[in-house]
Length: 122
Image 1 (cartoon, rainbow, N blue to C red):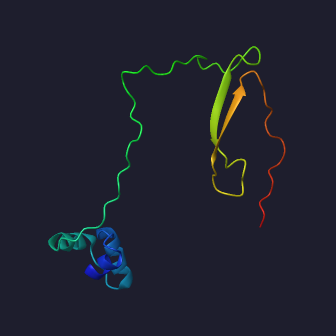
Image 2: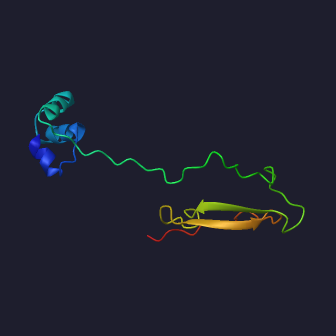
Image 3: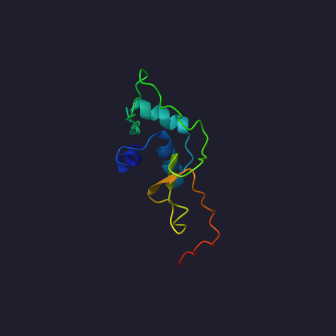
């Protein structure tokens, strides 16, 4: 148990140590490994918690919905709408990609894509 813990850079906890020991030989119980780790003061490394970077001020008023969820316009330059999209649809050959932003007038109607997607190279 100490050897597996040391080889992991002292990061493995009871679950991973149990899995390593089971892969190497006899069946061991996870609860026994937990008890022995407590007795010998062996601990795995804890994951870092995510920090909240933006904390909204409750005293500030939320942004008003000027369009009232109506995304149509009688003529161009009356209402502009924006969107941030993952560019995976534009690049089907790779996973995800950098996000892209678009700002479009609500009066402009763009037809859906009718061309077939480009096949990925082998």
